[in-house]
Image (cartoon, rainbow, N blue to C red):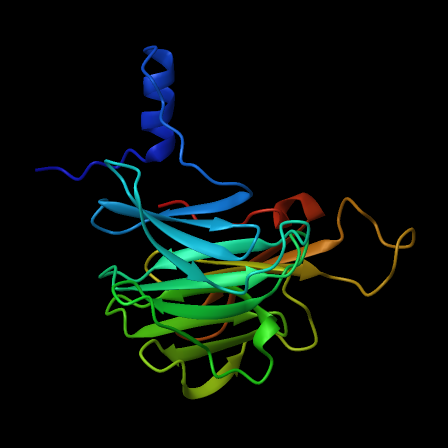
Length: 231
């Protein structure tokens, strides 16, 4: 059978256009949704720092995992990512929605146990990705470093690699095959109004095997809202 590449958005709009009832997941302040690899369950991240696991068919809540609970009036951004096998869930939590970096907590989906990365600067992570075997997590960080982590322990693997010296990454994205990293941040330390808002961001694509830049271009800050490779 061919893989169904249609995602949640496609089915949602299909049901809306056909007049079908669209069920809603209960809860407040939802800021992120991620489906497990088998498609049977999905996780939602709330602005209160809570992750909830749901059954896709019944929409019954199966588990609740606290990243760092806070009152809803302290709004936060939360990225979620399942490991390829679906047994580990990574949460990248930012204290406020406008923050570019945050800290990572790993969860055992079955037991609900959690453990943070053993990071000296835990709030420095901009983006995360799992390697194909699911045993290694990769982090891209504000100071231009790439780090590898053991997903079972949260301990670092080897030494960090610095791809960009003297610059700050505000957003980053890994390609699906983990061969490339796109990362962007201010190209100038000038503060407005001296900086040009139409060309004040430098976006660079790196070869992750060699660490060398592949391409770069100047753009505006709108690209930093969300950065993602096409499949």
